[in-house]
Image 1 (tube, helix red, strand yellow):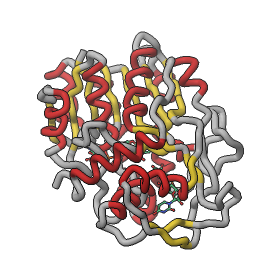
Image 2 (cartoon, helix red, strand yellow):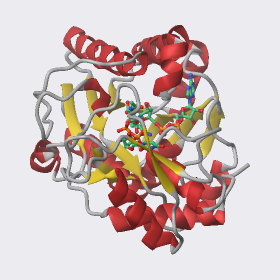
Image 3 (cartoon, protein in one colour):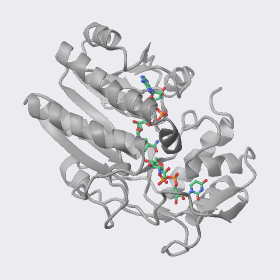
Image 4 (cartoon, protein in one colour):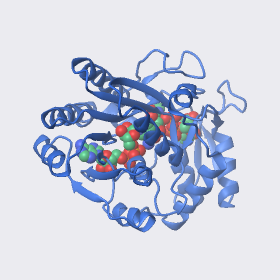
Length: 336
Ligand code: NAD
Ligand code: UD1
């Protein structure tokens, strides 16, 4: 069965393409390369010995999407394509609403025009806004603290309404906690443009000598060591979550949401120490003021995914830091 993977050249989409292939699906990648390299295709082939179909295109281009749906006889879409930098979204909100929300509306229109009725959407724990309780389950109130987060909230709502309007439609929103790690081959991983916003890529670049020192944003939070606590989930577990969700629901209709996390939180200092052990180097860090908008702790209640999808994260923090280091040390500058 062919499936379209929008944003399939990116960090999470590319790993999910491998998981889909392994599960017997045939991913067709659709990406405008705005935040990824065409060299990802060679890496995918080196890992899987399979030549993935790739179409360079934008989700804003309804006509191109429609021709791809028809040419490849696509019944389902895995929708990763999105801009995702929180800080940038506060500076360029219209660009974010346009790319993410209007882009998704175009995609759904093209799907409707071609009779494509199933979508799995990359949502985020960011839709919980400031947590009111922990661990966060799917019943937690929805909110956002920045335009990027609002695009996820809006798209989830659009998918709900899309399913209400047509009882044959299926939409699964997967709310990721903090994706981390890389493919165990060391051939595929995350390579953010410019200075990384997220903790693990920043630590990885410090370990490899590209950055001098990790700024630890806040050491006076109400956590065990005073630094922020997050639920890091291995990219391979996350990819497996997509296969489990779609395989479970592919005969169903309606909209579904699931948290994908491990349920366990790690502090910034714990992550720095874990990475230091994996890389066998000392990682310099200094305490810096809290980052605006950050919260003390965040971790998932993923019991719904466990119960309904039979999915549970298998890989621990050591796998995440070992695998990130294997990738980062092999490709210090990413694939470029
Ligand atoms: P990424 O930037 O590595 O991948 C996104 C891909 O989408 C890129 O290859 C980019 O070129 C492509 N793209 C962007 N806009 C497009 C458009 N208009 N048309 C076609 N292609 C387009 O990001 P990622 O980390 O792999 O994230 C994938 C999805 O998961 C995104 O929706 C993101 O918001 C969501 N998500 C990511 C995280 C995270 O920490 N990485 C956490 C929660 C949710
Ligand atoms: C961030 C986004 C969130 C998004 C997620 C995707 C913000 C405020 N939140 O989440 O919306 O869904 O990425 O993965 O940007 N930290 C440091 N030093 C650094 C970087 C981070 O100390 O250089 C700390 C942070 O304060 C936090 C933890 O590390 O406690 C994790 O940060 P990060 O990787 O950016 O993820 P989130 O803030 O959880």
